[in-house]
Length: 199
Image 1 (cartoon, helix red, strand yellow):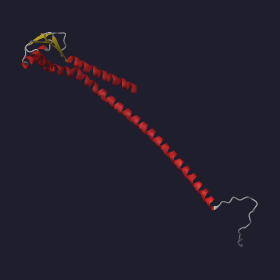
Image 2: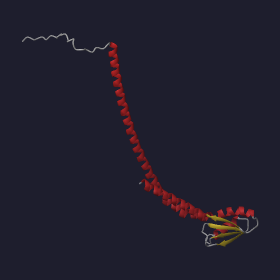
Image 3: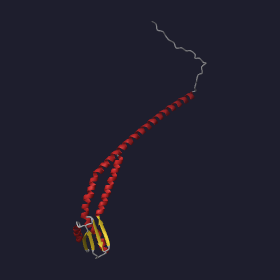
Image 4: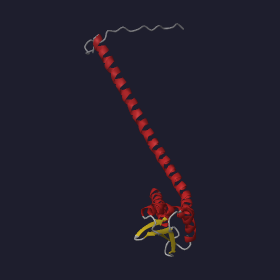
């Protein structure tokens, strides 16, 4: 069967319909405007995507910092809970023992300036009967001034009064230890309140 050929139709368009024609520079202007609109839309999309990513990163960073803060607080609380009994033992056992051993030397340090002021006047050392023999031994061995000793049961083991006529000086290591103990207790009381507040 023979093949049929088709020919292109070259009909003249109806000239009655208005036709938009653009000059070359108008066409170029339209293309440029289209390109700029597309570029601006792409830029806006990129900025919006970047803002979204920054917001997500900030939220992640905030959560991580919150987790880190909580972990630090837990570690801090654990360390303090571990230290609390050690510090209380030091205040109630170690410091009193140190105070007993050093009381004589502390009293001697207080005696020297007083003895210089009232050279030759006798100094009375008043102490708890439990500590008096130890204090007497230390002071008589290391002093070059006249001393007398008296017992006073109402004094604590870390307390000593020095009397020079009307003048008195007081050594109160018990008071120092009590102040340290109160400070340690207050510190841990505040820390426990902080723990409860942070949950």
